[in-house]
Length: 212
Image (cartoon, rainbow, N blue to C red; front, side, top):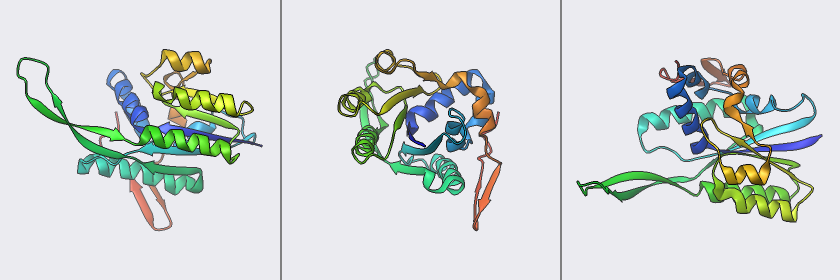
C-alpha cells in the first residue's frame, strides 16, 4: 500500500478559496471541509494511506484566529494522526506607500512556512515515510525542494495541486501534469464537514460567515 502525504501551504490554499468565493459565493461553504476526506477522493479507496500536513500561522486578529482554530480543531478531531498542523509565525512589517501620500503602513508577513514544508518533504524522503508527495501550493519557492527530491530520490513521486485561482508556470513545467483544484468542486462539496463537529467532549462549530 502506497504512503501518500499532502503538504498544504495553508495561506496559499485559504486565500485561493477566498478569491474563488468572490467569483462564485458557493465556494465560501468549502472553507469548512474535511481536508483528509478531500484528498482521499483523488485516490482509489484502499490503494493508499493518506495523511495531510497543514502548514499555517496563527492570525493576530482574534476573530480570524478563532475561525482558524475551529477549522483546524475540527479536522484534527475527525482525522487524528492523519492530520498534522505545523505552525509558522506572522510578523509585522512596515511597507512604504509608493503613491503620493508616502505613508508607512504595517502589514503581516508569514514566516517559516516555506522552510517547514521543504524540511518536512525532505525528511519524509530520507526516513522513507512517503512514496508520493503532493504539494498543495502554487509557490515556486519550493522548486529547489522538488528538484532535490527528484535528483536524490527518483523512486519517489512528486505532484503539485494548485489551490483555486492559483497557478505557477515554473511548477507546471517541473511537475506536469498538475491538478487544478478549482476543477474539482464536487470533491470539495463531498468533503464539507457537519456544522458542528463533536467528539470525546470536544466541540467545534462552523463560523457563521463561512456560508454562501
